[in-house]
Each structure stands twice: as C-alpha cells, then as structure tokens.
Image (cartoon, rainbow, N blue to C red; front, top):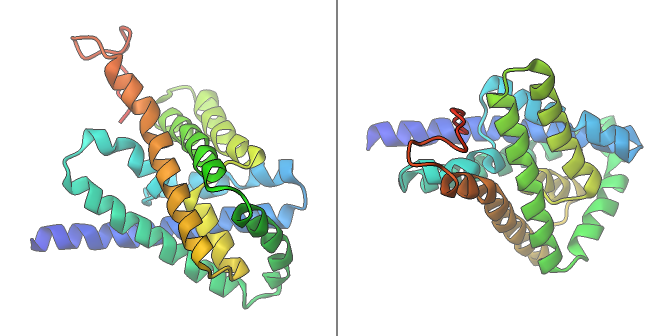
Length: 223
C-alpha cells in the first residue's frame, strides 16, 4: 500500500508538471495572434512532456489496454495533476502583463461552451487519435525527421482544426474564469472523447496483431 501511494503521489506531481507544460503551449498559442503559427508553437507543450517524462492524461490513456486495472486509478491521479497544473498556471499568468490574453481566451472558451456536447465529444475523439500518432511516432520512429514530423503534425493539426484536448481546455477554462456547471460538464465530455480517441488505434492495432505477436509482420511495439 505504501509503495502504491508513493507511486500515485509521483504520478500526481508529474501530472502537475504536464499540466504546466500544456499551459505554456496554450499561452504560446494565445500570444501568436495567428492560428497557424500558434498551432506550431503549441507543440512545445508535448515536446517538454515527452522529453522530461511528465504524465499527460491524453497520452497515458492510450496505454490502458496494456496495463492492469490499477492503471485506471493512476489515470485519475494524472488527470487531477494535469488540472492542478493548468489551474496554477492560469492563476499565475493572470497576475502578469500577459493577463491581456484573457480576451482572446474568453472568445475560445465561449465557442466551446456554446457548442453541443455531441460536437465536443466527437472533436475530442479526433484530437486524441492525433495525440496517439504524435506520441507513438516520437517514441518509436528511428528516423529523426519522422519523429519530428509525427510530433509536429500530430499536435499542430489538432490545434489548427479546433479538436478538443481536455488538458488544454483545463487551462483555457481556468484562465477565462469560466467556473460554471456547463464548464464542468463540457470538460467531462471532452475527457470521455479523449479516452475513446486515445484507445481507438491501440485497440485496432491489438486486433490486427498476428499470432506471433507482430503487426503485419512488424516488430514495432507501440507501447
């Protein structure tokens, strides 16, 4: 039990750091003034997480099928850590000269909160399909160009398209001060969509595995 609690505490702390990392990406996006440029600079968040081994919910959930049921509890702690990291980042940025970015953030948040729950759910599914591509490619591709393209396109495309990422939305909601019941419900639905999107390709890959454990003859392990 003590070992498990220590492990969960570590997951929580690494989750907070991941929430801060994604928040930095969100600030970069808001500061860019241009959606295309902003989507490219947003990549810094996941770049930090992958290189520093922080815990991002949308990345970790992709490997739920490869772990024991206890992993679900780890994911809960990671999600909480991500939220705390986003909350702290939003509060701190709000005390700086960058608080002027709130106006742009409020526009983004209003669009999200006025959207239908079905729309948020579907957009969240597509978001985490791309996040899986980014994480899988960065960890498994040997060619540095392929690794970089997987990360850049996987992240920037979901931002450019307006797909829903629960941790990024945590920051946007907190920074805009959108503390409403609708915000909580929207974040819950977006999280569910991210879970479905994150598990979709790993499930297909598992079903497509040959009896020898390879996928179409490949020795690549997507974990």
